[in-house]
Length: 205
Image 1 (tube, rainbow, N blue to C red):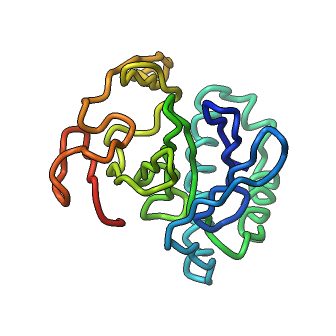
Image 2: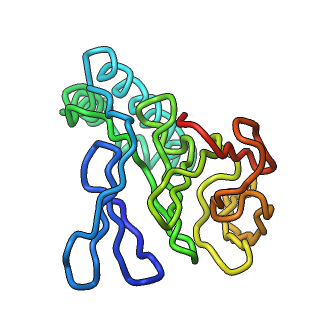
């Protein structure tokens, strides 16, 4: 489940593969559902094959790293028989029949929601980010990587991100969003044109 808490204590959560964000008050009652006309993709044979190939590539890359790190100990633990079993399990795994539309959710200080969609590939969790205002209306979309989903929001447009260096050491970096894209305001520039930060204030993407 994907979820976050709005400033008034309302919980926004996603518990399905569709673009549906349910709002639940502190009294446990549903206050509404935010939706956009974006449907989940069915996991047909072609997508299943692509998912398996992607997971196998990731597994092989991780096994290579472990082999380099562990040396002879790796060869003793991961015999050819064990590796064959791991690959067979991967090939025969079952997938949910639909690829979820949404992958992330963050609430801002003013009650807006940043909603991250899947990317081009089914396994890509860092796709475009939609901004929904406190009234539930769609404000616009950040393109993938512009600026990315913050770890947390702060006052005056401050947002915190986790960045990794070449040694994969994590650092928390605090940045300030440009005024014209801050919190997905109704008036964030010229409709249909990209402003600073990659925000497009009109039209579904």
